[in-house]
Picture 1 (cartoon, rainbow, N blue to C red):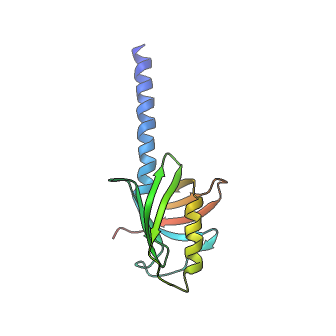
Picture 2: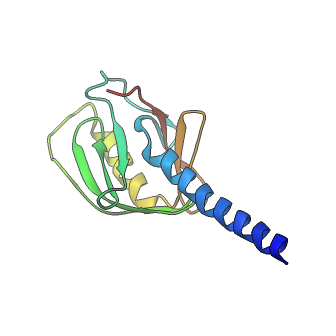
Picture 3: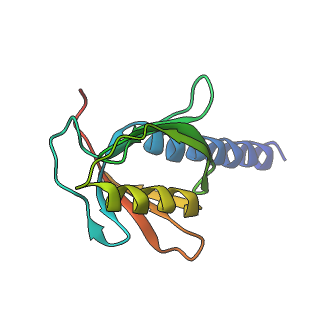
Length: 140
């Protein structure tokens, strides 16, 4: 009986820690945008590159850039689930980046899941279509 109880404790702890590991993958990088709805991201310098950063403390917060304007907001994530709350952004005009910005903003609203592997992050909608694709950036 003690052996069975110990096995269950091991399984439960593994599931809990496994959930933490997946969240850490999301939050452990600054992610540079490489693709929006299958269209390659606009190529810019690292300082202006479209990117996203997830922070869990003190409260779940997302920030980044669309390649033109900066944004900040909230998010909720689980093992692979992901939704964004209200997002606020600056409103500069960038004629060369406005199409990407609109697609980026719409995709964020549609995201319901995420997956990360081999330094890449994919944000997917409820049909499992990849809406946004990112690559981990080098630490600053």
